[in-house]
Length: 180
Image 1 (cartoon, rainbow, N blue to C red):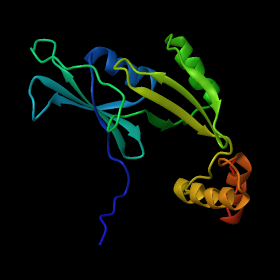
Image 2 (image 1 turned 120 degrees about the vertical axis):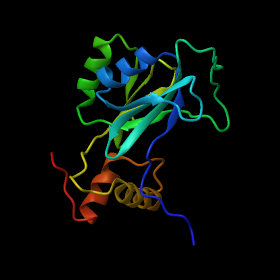
Image 3 (image 1 turned 45 degrees about the vertical axis):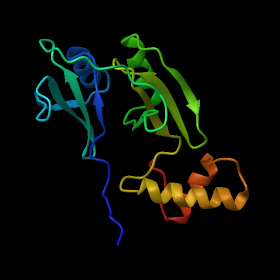
């Protein structure tokens, strides 16, 4: 019998600067800092937990200023994180205004067929994607069900990637309509 899960609780990252990380995740991304304590496995690290919404969190382990713990820089490759994507609750234009206000350089908006995305790096060098669906999902809709149905439509059509019309058709076939 396979193990089943009910969502991602948290990715855990190493960070380089406590204050910059707290400012970025609370002020720029609007996450709530819900835990700040010594790391129970390595007391030279501070453990932070930010609420990302929907029961998901971002955890950070950051060396204490008064400690002698030095961490190496991460590198891209097998087993490393390429980026973390966050669903927006504001328009992509509002997100761009906030990033500009904090002088954070970003790439985008990039059209991804059925979504639009912005990419930038947090103070720890982690690549972050902010994304929004072109057709907003109705409240309570299962994102995975819509993507899976749109994928089937894409394959049937022989399209290169999922496009907006696939999502709209998937919603329609599921008896859903966009809230816009």
